[in-house]
Image (cartoon, rainbow, N blue to C red; front, top):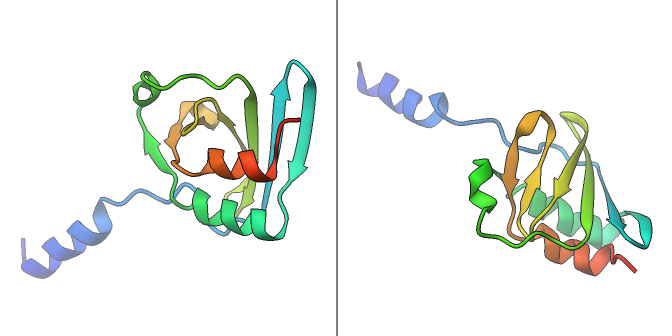
Amino acid sequence: MTPVISLFALFFGCQAAPTFQGISSVTIQAVSVNGLKRTTLQQTGLREAVDCLYATTDVDASASASRQLLDVTYLIQVEDNYGDRNFELYTDRHMKGNKGHYYENFCIFEIISVYAPRK
């Protein structure tokens, strides 16, 4: 294999598509014993959530085994270039998406706590 082809394969051949691309809307639904509260993020909250969601990575389902489950279920609805999709945040950093995919994000729970409180 030539050096040029090796570099091409290294940089482009093994990268997975990003989880999100071109996010235009983020809506949070908190589901608790008190009912359902829906919040569509606006302005600062939306900007922070978008920046944060771009850092989401795919993980194995077992990655969340040591994390405590949340007492409130948060459904995160994201509208982006891939469509209108829903994710369940079930620990402070793990989400489950469609088709059995699991994701990790270290900042979305803090943003939800500030901009979409469950009260």
